[in-house]
Image (cartoon, rainbow, N blue to C red; front, side, top):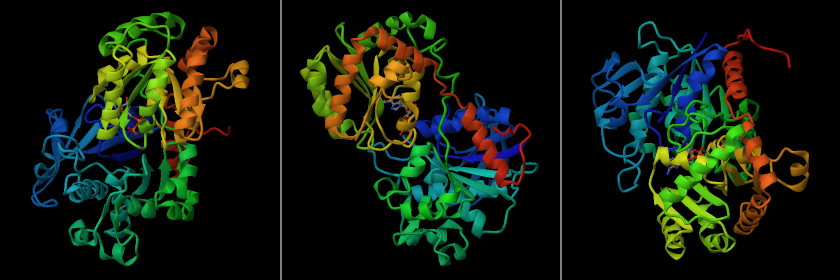
Length: 487
Ligand code: ADP
């Protein structure tokens, strides 16, 4: 068994704001059959502490980044977790990253330095009988871990940093350096320096033994100026340790055959039963019945996701017989634009601003087209859920979307391999053309149903990727895995 500690700011089912939580939550079970024992280190937000009733204290400090802190170990709905309980850092309402007003918590630098330092302490053996061999760090919130490992007192551990989204980088001023408890050599070497300040993600990318990102295409994209967001030079320099490993989905939590959030369960062979969910979606969003497809958005409403481009296309979508449901929140301008479309088109466009896990499942099981016109998309899980639930993805050809959806051009339809509609570039014009193609395909029911069923059967599991992570850990440790094959 390889012992891995996964360090992240969110993990489903304890705390989730996006795909990161799904991935961190799913990895331990996905990796277990591959000889990896994975625990997850998380901050003790109120939602997380509420689930840690049966946990036990395994370490504690009287002054940990400005206040007392304890590590609590326990098992919650599956994964083994270790929670950093530090009331002065995490015991506050709202989102892990922002205040109720949507502004970053001003002490985020300290909150996530503390999380990273706790990971380092665990590698130092602060908990008796527990010695992780690999620290698997996720995004900028765990970016300082590899820097602590490299520059503070030596620890027998290797580090992997996974980039789930390079747009979020954790950039702060030098003023915080002394509070980070990081050896001064880290500053002298320039390892954490980023555009004149300190970069948490940059530090991780510089110091980690291996870097992964969540799709092969994104692994290439982030080495280019267009997608690297300032880190492309570093990633080019470290290209030999950068790996693209596609995310999978938690097939238990996302199984249309058993999903309790659906009005009617169905499988690829009982796909006609999807109709019950479509009616439930219509009811929930106040839509009139219709012959055209229901397009759906389940997403953060941001520039990254390209949903500003949907606003001006709503009228045409409706004029062509389509309907639209939106579940999400984010930029006020996009929220308002979509609300405006709902007011102009009652019964045709429905918008729920907010976050609702159960409703997201129902939409996947009842809508016809899952819309993701992202400008960049590291992997994207929503299109994978769409495939699994027969909600045909309409996506831009970027990152993980390019790697997971096969476009229904005539050759692919003829060859029987298409699973969705892929457009490029990520512009309003190409997106509009994608919508028109989706509507046309929907009105070819034979082609459409085959595409739905093919999507439902396509492999979106963790199987292949879990093996790649296990191989990566083993190679970092100089081990050969027993179930290695030569194919
Ligand atoms: P990202 O992590 O960039 O936001 P992903 O597609 O990788 O995008 O993952 C998004 C995850 O968050 C999916 O599980 C999706 O169902 C969920 N999600 C996004 N917005 C909402 C919402 N408003 N309500 C419920 N679930 C949502």
